[in-house]
Image (cartoon, rainbow over all chains, first blue to last red; front, side, top):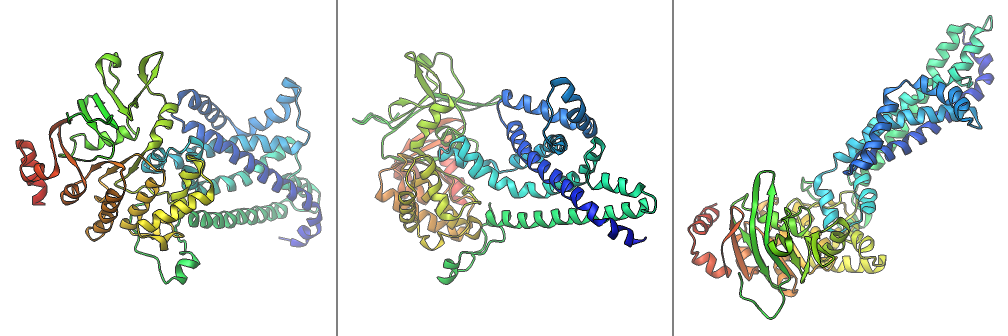
Length: 243
Length: 270
């Protein structure tokens, strides 16, 4: 492979790289929001809350991302006369809703895995449903979610290449454009593309691993006793086993 | 039924039924508990003791009976309906909002401690004070520090629960329940999950609380020595009914019913 060709075309990749990053981060944020919303709703004991959430989840999981992209990009403006101000919003919304629906199952499973005793203790202390959810249940479920959410985030990054199909110039679209110019060798551009996506995925993995370690410390796993306890000469006691 | 006193009972079970599927765990159960009384519930497993505590903590709900005004099936606490609420002069099954208000005066310590693992010891004890009782953070922390000192864990304030032994965790759980100033404290086999050498510390703390406060206690335990020391009354359950009840001295030294005798012989032989 002739890497000189890539180096020569590097400046043209700067903006598409930024588009890919924006679409990935933007849709990840939407997906996280959607995942918690739908995940909490599908965990509800009330049928009236659970049912609509289930319908939304199954709809977005059951239909193709590409078709959803086309809907947001072309069908919605015609049907509703509504168009996003920025083209990348189409990609952010379609990917965010799709991956948010998938991830809501992760959120639901992690909430379901919080021991029953925790809910009972929250009831015994008369905590409101809000306090129970956000201060007791979610903080314990969160570290459990991170590994699965990481997989989804990496899949989301790779799926962001799909936005090139609705005329958004991301990395993939640019590689196609540059590669077709004679002398620029499509294979070289595609090879470069593989490497860039891999590096981006690696950045996501590393970031999420840090997050996971922090989250686990937040529930006392791998946490050191406070400085004060150490200064007083009290080390970590044998764990009581039950958590 | 216990002899009536001048005080209104703090807890009254009036013909309470509780079914789990086809199984009737409590059968038209009636009993009164006076304010400040400490009552131990004993009996073979499956006799309904823990269900009574869970009903009082509203973790379970009574099996509704038709026309509760005449037929009972109602739990009363502090003279007010508890499992039910008055609406238009009649008793209806209590809704969640009513229960959330009423259960604030009831506290519970669990067999498995159930401390919040995501909070350090101090916050385990302050969290509900701040969010449920709306105490200021300073007030809640002062109270928590006092109680953690009472249970002998002042030096563990900044640790996470999983850095503590089972006995220490259970003592934090006791402090957490007391921080809510309950009128009624429910102790559900609080030493059953502990290693034998850790039981004594937990029981010592509870003895101390029993001696120095007037909190009404309902205790489910297999520690007969503890039951004898702290309780005013022992109720023997079998298959959802009270077989026998008496002072601890009488029930442990001279049980009248065959089922009580058999049960005590089995437990004390362990």
